[in-house]
Amino acid sequence: DQQVKQNSPSLSVQEGRISILNCDYTNSMFDYFLWYKKYPAEGPTFLISISSIKDKNEDGRFTVFLNKSAKHLSLHIVPSQPGDSAVYFCAARRDSGGSNYKLTFGKGTLLTVNP
Amino acid sequence: DAMVIQNPRYQVTQFGKPVTLSCSQTLNHNVMYWYQQKSSQAPKLLFHYYDKDFNNEADTPDNFQSRRPNTSFCFLDIRSPGLGDAAMYLCATSEGTVGLSPLHFGNGTRLTVT
Image 1 (cartoon, each protein chain N blue to C red):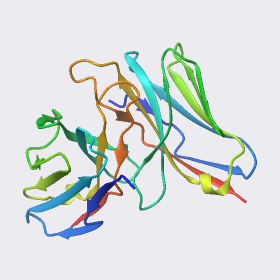
Image 2 (cartoon, chains in turn orange, blue):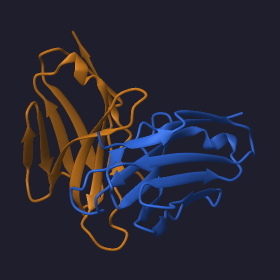
Image 3 (cartoon, rainbow over the protein chains, first blue to last red):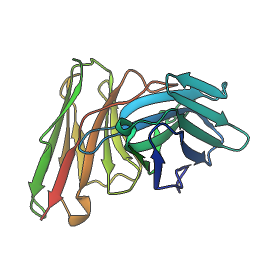
Image 4 (cartoon, rainbow over the protein chains, first blue to last red):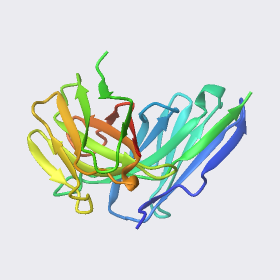
């Protein structure tokens, strides 16, 4: 039962263009969403997050959009740079209480930014 | 720099031979997690410690155990590794478990079972 889905295993874009990474979720109780970036041979590093009370959060070149009614979020990277080439994981968590701490991850999308 | 350190980076063990993976942190976070990640799969939570309180995931096999002797260290013990336990094991920490508290990951230990 995969509650967080990243349906595109890979994405390739040209340097300077926009990268759009998508994530869908099935659990309507999720309230918090986080994106992680992972380089080969390294652990995932936190990138950006959004709570369900917002529909957009921006940090420099990275913007996350949340559409609660569609249970969909996306990460936009503008402009894309070769150093952005990595695996991007979407993760989600419910609000506090009981076992709701758990951060559930998607399978990740490999982004390749070509010079 | 404050960080999460996992040792060793690569571990090879024989089928059925117990193995221990270690994790230390300098972030002074109260929560420590162990995730298992197989190729092209989502990281899967095995268990976590909230301070000294151990929280096991319902589907974590009994073969996997954990110890947290103090705030800084956490160990993953695999009592009888099988071929299916070959994976990347990720340790992570967080300050609390709610809201937008991000997890901070180590670089992982890649376990090979021969």
